[in-house]
Image 1: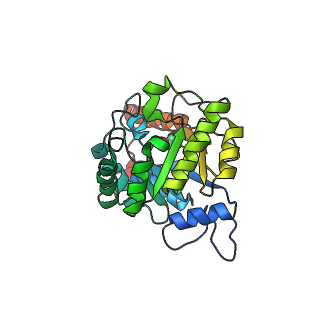
Image 2: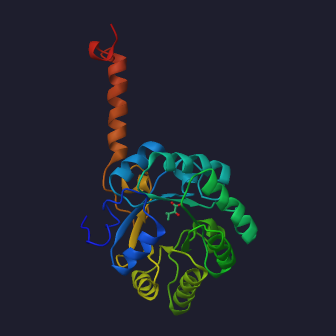
Length: 280
Ligand code: KIV
């Protein structure tokens, strides 16, 4: 949590205002590493904001962790908008990034602009994220031209799980690695302010990070990206099944389960509520 004289550190540094995409780009120049988490509701967003997490992503992973689907495909703009608005309302410092869900941007730059504008106007997000490299370059250009900061996302792009043939590591081998690097450069050229690299070999992620002037954000991409992101329920040990790249920093599953059992036992025994938790 160190700060330099000229610029506050992204993680935990005081700004007295929201973190901006300019702050993010300056952190790359300082070679500063930073954390990003997902958030989908007001209470957890406030906790992460007060912990100094500089970027919160309202991910389409909400499809699984909030709505209970088995992929990100079914979730819609209307599903994600209220979650984004809640995260924006609950935070003061974090840059809030809204994920554009499957089917809301692939069709055309105009469609992308319509969806992104709703996340900015109704969700009060400060940026949006979309999946894909060269195939969405026109969408990125249109959004950036309209004043909407864009985070790219390449490698394992879960919205394309049906064409990728499953959730598997991407960019292995010379040809696939070169294609991924070209996609990253294309996103940078189109104006993206950062790019998520999901499930790619560490060595390739390091090469992409070195060759881009915008930050890379890794998830299953090894230690050499500029930033790291995790789905918060995975990070806190609430998700029942997690990928190899996930590290759980708490055991919320156990904590919540114990709390629920203790509550239930006391209700059954008649010891809750006691006098302390009752009105006279
Ligand atoms: O939707 C999401 O949570 C994401 C992150 C895992 C990067 O896209």
